[in-house]
Length: 188
Image (tube, rainbow, N blue to C red; front, side, top):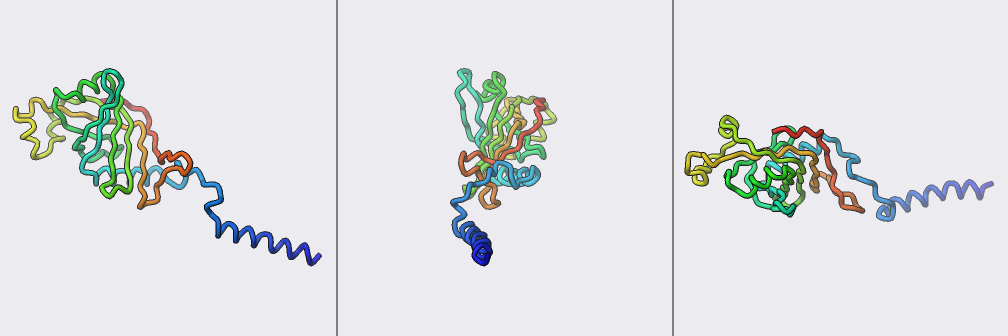
């Protein structure tokens, strides 16, 4: 009897030592959304988006090939809708009119994370809204009193985030980033 009670005490102790000394041998948890609540992901995504000076806007050309360009975005709205100003004659306007699917990519200034917004883009030509979304210094790009100035509004379907300083990381096996899906509401 003494032998079996000694074994029953030693076995859990060995297991505990094994777990503490060799955590890398245990299967990794799926962290796609585990441990992350929607509000925290939104807060940290907005911080990265605001701190990034520029972002990439990716649209699809007529053949379906992705076209990327650097953009100077306005700060994201509460629901992560993003606005841009551009020239009405630019390629991106025609691409968005042909296919509204778009992707935005923001990299954290220190390279320690990123945000990807996948959604739909819309062209907005409303005088009052254009006044709201205007940056001082853009006069040189629109010398004709803003007559060629138009807006792009990107409404998110899905947001992915990696933020290493805050422990928001990709799945260890697939590298899939934590994400949030938004209800479809494609309205301009």
